[in-house]
Image (cartoon, rainbow, N blue to C red; front, side, top):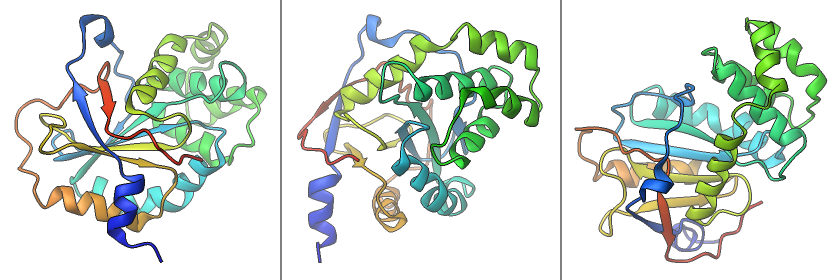
Length: 234
């Protein structure tokens, strides 16, 4: 049986952030892809694809426990990022559908509905999902048909690549204020690992985390440099 320490050194790779350049930073519309308190001391980012079976496994089995123990209690802020595994097709279309729902303040209901299908997605059903969650259907269809948010979606994927991820799901655990430093680096968790592994890393970081003060770290446009790129991602 692999020891906890060995697991951490293999799959929880330590990362550092370089300062973003002006070109990297850009501006991204706040479409409500955050769950939990902005003042939570720890932030967990997920890079994911709505068609990924392991991503659906995380959503069905691990997410409810993380939500109950850490997000709803104000300990962790959760942020979702798109990582379509192909440049076109149903994964990209699902990401667009979720973003278009987010434009109407209903990102999470669409996100949850898409993942509840466990990868069995059909773009012909997205309009029905929009109606079911109470969206303005005309505005949703226009947004979807025009493929709005494509640039932002692929910018998320580029961000994941800079962290060293080349598949889904991938997670980054980071201090909310101040970001990672050489002394307190971010932790990468590749793959749909069990809840207990997330909890171990979160508790370890919480044990030394100060109360959140100041402005949360802006995570878009960061340039990540990994100590090791030997990720094992499903």
